[in-house]
Length: 105
Image (cartoon, rainbow, N blue to C red; front, side):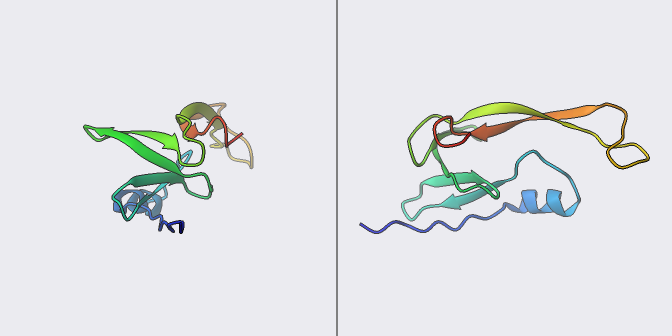
């Protein structure tokens, strides 16, 4: 059995947002298999997530390696908006980053 090679790409809306200089905690890339199965992976990471359910534009994913349900972790980053390098008001921004609890730390 030969393994299919997936070609992951950014959607036009993600490309536009990145071109505008917007910053995100993770950027998803998408691919569709020859059988129509949809996949996603965070840009720069090798673990692939497979869409197992899609309803009203909401997708649910499992890890393509181990079939574990994909979880999300809240991450926070400081906003460096001060006059000097690494200085700022103390504000942070937060967001949810997906990960496989088995395959990703």
